[in-house]
Image (cartoon, rainbow, N blue to C red; front, side, top):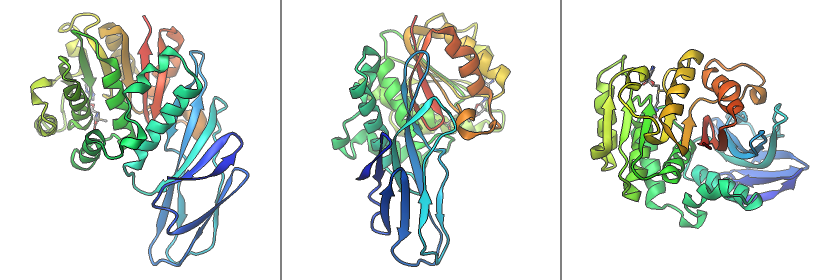
Length: 336
Ligand SMILES: C[S@@+](CC[C@H](N)C(=O)[O-])C[C@H]1O[C@@H](n2cnc3c(N)ncnc32)[C@H](O)[C@@H]1O
């Protein structure tokens, strides 16, 4: 990664993949990008923002991938300008990373650096979880290689940086005698991330994966195969039911991590939160997926249930502190 400069309190960084093909310059907070030569095919660059998000419970770092795209059509050699911004006043830009179109292992490395920067500037016991992240100098550690393997081999709706966040939150939440509850496993992409992180720690936790697999029963077999591919089949407990069915099965405060990624309808996410709130031990971590930020996007996203539940129900309880966000995944610590 190459630092291009600083502007308006933010650092501008380019991925290694870009400098060979483009000349990049910074004027204030506006990037100018010029292709070095004409190419016959379309090229797309992907701006990724590091925002600091202000909340009544304190600021948290977010890696935001909804920053648009910079597209060069085939044959285009004239420059394009790009100025990052957010419509949301609670989001302050700390850094902008200009990456290649498809995610690479640079994405988790950048996310880890973002979290380390956040913790270094705001020393507080709430940021102790950052210590579970590998230092960027570790390069392609076995953890990074495994996340990349799952990214390419386990189908699912879970971005590489979201896998990185879920891995970190699994490690940071482990409590003796407690387990993990996942609502919405689909084909086990996220399930395998959680199970592998627990395996690294040799933790005693089981992963209780809940999904009715209504579209195809085979999804449950694929989930098991993906968890087996990281050597952790023995941890997996699959419940092929809707989330409500586990309410009478599990004791209060049985979990150190709950991951909510089932139905995205408001009423369903609300019920999933209420269930997970009861099942999560104090000090444990709850991760939600598909938490869009309407105020940042400037429109109401189609799957708005998770964001509404987080903003209208979870945060106003004052019992959950946001720790970090990666793309559409948001992790919160249960305070009591
Ligand atoms: C977006 S997918 C989950 C993606 C998965 N976490 C991954 O890593 O790819 C949502 C899943 O939630 C499941 N689902 C829908 N309603 C549910 C409910 N009430 N309880 C549990 N799972 C549910 C669906 O069957 C679907 O497989």
